[in-house]
Image (tube, each protein chain N blue to C red):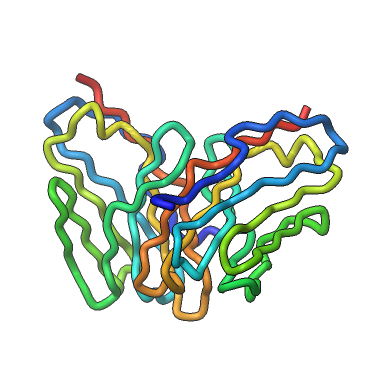
Length: 111
Length: 115
C-alpha cells in the first residue's frame, strides 16, 4: 500500500531557483527516505532521516521531518537542469518489511 | 556485484505467455525486494525476501505471480499467463538488512510489455 503522498505532483522551475517537495504519511515510522528516479528506471537513494531527527542536510539537499504532523519536506537549493527527475518519499514502519513509496513529484528544471 | 543487476532490461511478450525476470542483488545483501511501477505511477510493493524465505508476499497481485530466491542471492519473479495489465517496469532492490535504518538499492528495472 502507498503510505507516503508527495505534493505537488509536478513542479516546474528555472535553474538557480529552489525546489520544495512535501510528503505526508499516515502511520508511525522508524525513518523516512527520499529517492530520485530518472526516466522511469531505477531509483537512487538521496537521504534518510530517522524519526528522532528534525532536519538533515546533504549537499544541496535539505530534508525536514515533523512527526507530529506526519510530514516531511525535501528542499533542493540552487537547482540545476540535471535535477530534473521524479522524487519519491518512502517510509519504513516498525512492523513492515519493505518501504512504502508515494506517487512522486515530477520536477522539471529549465535552463 | 557492484550494484543490483536485473535482466532482461526489456521484454515484449504475447498475452498468455509466461515470463521470468531475474534479479542479482548486491553481494552480501540479505534482504531483497520486488516492486512494480506502472507508467507515471508510484512503486507498488510485491514481495520481500530475507535470505531465501519470503516473510511478506502480500503485494503479489494474483496467483499468476510467484517469486523465489535461491542461495540467498539471485531471485526470479515469474508471471504466468501474462495479461496486458501486467505491463510495467519491475524493479528489484536489495539492502543489508531490513528497511529499518537501511538504505535499499535499486536495479535499473525490467520493462515488461504484454501485447
